[in-house]
Length: 165
Image (cartoon, rainbow, N blue to C red):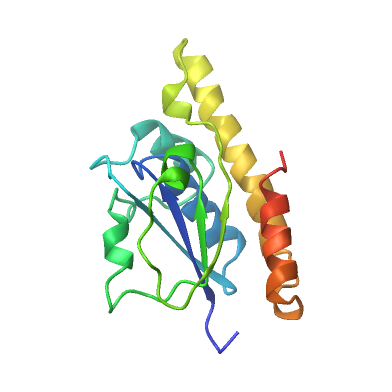
């Protein structure tokens, strides 16, 4: 582990809900072992207030979250990423920057709760479902014996996690 936590970047197009939730979950569930970040290819400029409300309701600290470009993490002085996960279909299809150090990557697409239509209660439920899916995948990820897996085995496990719900 080189004396530092593994750096993980969650990518989405807008960096306003799913990737922010994933960052919050991993920073709490993987404390000491992982440091999570999030970014978007076309950042929305603000974090969705419904995502913030849900995260606060679940006792996550939200004061430092902001919608930001993935360009911040492609700069020479940015943290070196060990893992990069896309959490939405749009970002998975885009050409990503070249990440220094060739981090492990996987696509963990989850539905965009912002696209859900219905009552406020139904939309809140969609945000909750997205959070639950991310929590499930991240819980599996933080419990992988990363240090004892070779690169091919680890990549296979990361891809398998995408089918967990």
